[in-house]
Image (cartoon, rainbow, N blue to C red; front, side, top):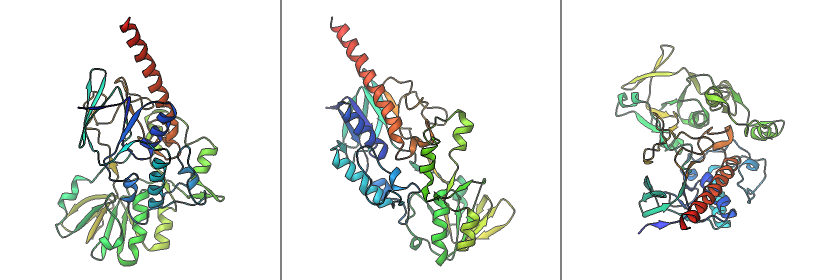
Length: 358
């Protein structure tokens, strides 16, 4: 027997919790399904020294203040604890250890098969987040078995990395944060592809996102694919040159090939390495959604989270509407818009049912 409710939210991270908070405020019955064992666990699984580049003031969700100074940069465990406290504060119905296996359309809504049974609802919000599956380039298979490889999604601390020489492939925010902490015990080469503009975490004593908020840049709707892509590639913190000068991390060009123990770079140079850390980002995974709303690359086609499938919504994708769509403070804007669409959808369905009853 399927468990039925008005709305199912898939994903219990910040996006799913905000959606739940707003649904509860609107008087809509719902459940949140999350595959982790604790609320906030996805943050706890990140590397030990991770600090958000957003000040605490902009790590808050609606209705609950983030603890501590509003101008500090929280660690990943602080963020995880805050999300857990948020769920408890508002008694949001999160089903933990519940992995969604498939989503299929049925008459009047959707059926979700999970590791803990079947759920059905006329409307579904997919809030599985911007970062799901590690992206590792195909060339990785050509590295020798005695070269240690790890993706930033499972990297925790320098003690995991054997040998003396390590290449960090990818110099965006993850790679730029991890490379310096490896330096005390390793020779570290940081491989950069395209140039990334760098902005300090603070300017005139205020966090970068404080300025982005005050000038309306983060919440501004993105216009066109060129704008959307440009907004994704910002290095928050010191520039790579500053990192290199301060720490001794060696900056090298794009990694173009690997073979055995050798990593080759775009300028024709190479290095023999003991380890490679792939800071090459993540990819979406919506393959479990058996609804014709995905493009050729497997990404949902949506307009501010609303898909062409009636009652099916997407929340928390990177740059899905604005630069803030996947950022903690700003996700509430897209969530509020979706909850309003859910209320309208429910009203239309109620009217249709009433007419059918007559």
